[in-house]
Image (cartoon, rainbow, N blue to C red; front, side, top):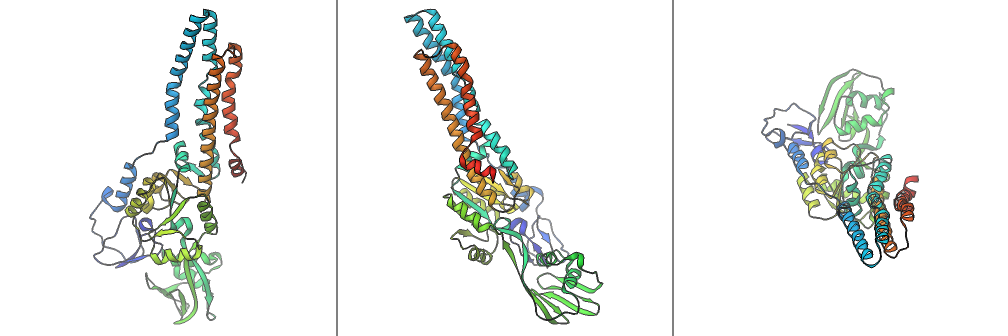
Length: 433
């Protein structure tokens, strides 16, 4: 028997007991006794390997607006050549060759495909660069369009809404101890990998703790750790510290909610997005979370990686936010997968966006930025098509000469560039914040 940390696969912060005869999975961490394991599956057949395999083989998304622009650009030249030839033939038959040739050449000069070609790439390139400076690493420009269409955001609780590690709360001294409790904790727990031990060690100033020889040091996961220091018997168990079998302190632990979590969740909801929590944690831990953030969110607890993926797959225009291997398939099944800081390598492979800033503030910025970017892209396409349409009309009506066409031709590209640089009011506010 032993205890294992399954957080990589389940997201559960607390260790779970693994009894003789039960399955244990690659990617989990043994915390206690040595295990004799019979390997039944290897490589891609393991639970972790199957997740990676599904991630690598998952479908890729394409951008609708980029495809649309490519189709327009594909026929743009043929349409301009057809119009020029038609104008030439018409004027040649009704007027003379010089006028027909002049008008046809004018139309070829003034109808510039550059603005249309720049309408999307320049905008996306600028946004991708500035987004990276704000801690949003976006894999491709098509991701921006997909984010702008998101209607449902699924969030894994651990490491996103919460810190993803246990912290000590309400540490209370019951009676004076013979040795400083910081030194007791340090010497008993310094070699432990248990989440509670790590939380205790993080709480104390280790540089102020003296090392002592601990006689009879024993750690039993699920029960506690005990040993004798300077002939004094100490135990840390049941979230309490005992000295010679007398309780001298007690404490509580929790996976703390990030300070800005509620504020960011509210900001996401204000953008008219359906927000849901998917987690491998227990129902009790999830209910405790909801009671603290005080928001009416739809939650599903105790979910394995495939259940998460199936839930995401059933919905349309989705975003999945997570950090563990247990989120990887769901990240890939979503229209947009977002891995947060500290994410596992497998999650980074599956994700479309990587947030280098902790917390959910990056999600709020990402959604806002994507929606505003698409406004600019559509504005640029409109400006480009409007310019070319007006130019065609002006040439057909005889209001533009070849010289004037050569002068005003770059204006369309300049207009698109200025539009992209100026962006929108919300984008400018985001860059300044």
